[in-house]
Length: 164
Image 1 (cartoon, rainbow, N blue to C red):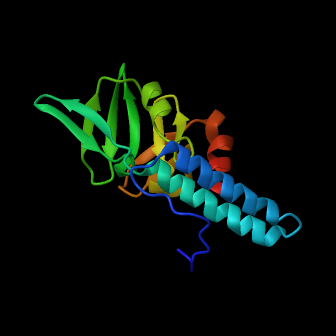
Image 2 (image 1 turned 90 degrees about the horizontal axis):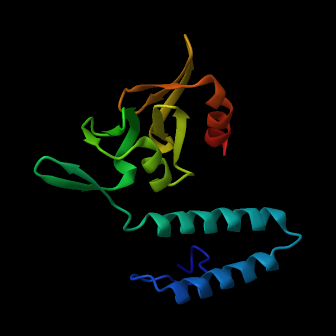
């Protein structure tokens, strides 16, 4: 941690008060960087990665099926597709599950910086994006080989999300 220039340690189980203290310490350090933009930007990036990691730890979702339910890490998702009032969840390993929750529910459940609605019927995991194609429309080519349509009115948001 010292080699990584750590400000503090956050141990599991995460205590909200300890987390607040750690964030306050980090903010104090950010204030020290005023006028030194290059160091500040590097520090903010490191802090953002740490927050992202903390938020992702332990987050699992459940999908019901005929014999029970499956627990999974959202990072395993390639993309989601609306099927009426249900959602087909396509996983990176090629498997898929049908859930009775709507795509809108999943859009709200999943991390907005990782999952993006690209079409009225599709949400993609940006971490699983392999390629963008402009060929007879706009398409997101996913690592699992899926070709997901991107609506014309969502291309700008897609580009902004990919570039950020």
